[in-house]
Structure formats: structure tokens, C-alpha cells
Image (cartoon, rainbow, N blue to C red; front, side, top):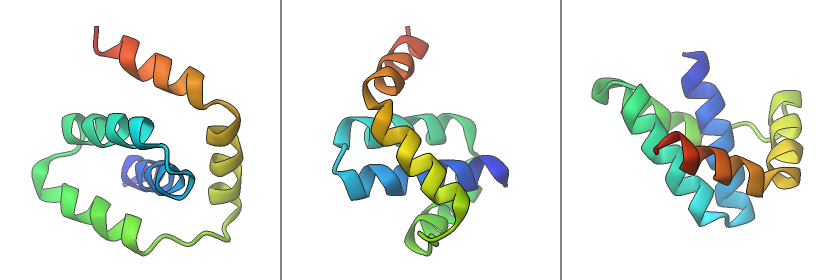
Length: 79
């Protein structure tokens, strides 16, 4: 459940910042790590995310400041 919440926040931040590359990499990662029957929960979490929570603000700042490093790590993970 924690992984789903964290991924939902990260994907929502990517949607807000229009970072399509990182969003796609996170969706692919979610498909690998989350069973198909729980993917619907991820989509529901993304649709109903609370943008005023401290965790959302921290993750938003972190992703905006480290986008290139995160993308680089996600791509290297697949090799």
C-alpha cells in the first residue's frame, strides 16, 4: 500500500509538471512491481490525490529538483 501511495504521488507530480518521460518510466515500474488486480487502486489514488499534504509537497520539490537524475536511474535500472 505504501508503494502504491508513493508511486501515485510521483506520477501525479509528473503529470502536473508535464514530465512525460518520467511519468512513463514510473508507470512501467508500477506495472512490474504491482499486481494487476491492484493497479486499479493506483489509478484511483492518482485521481484522488491530496496535493496539500506534507509528503506531496516534499516529493514535488524533490522530483522538480532531481528530474534528470531520477530519469537516468530509472533507465539504468532496466539495463
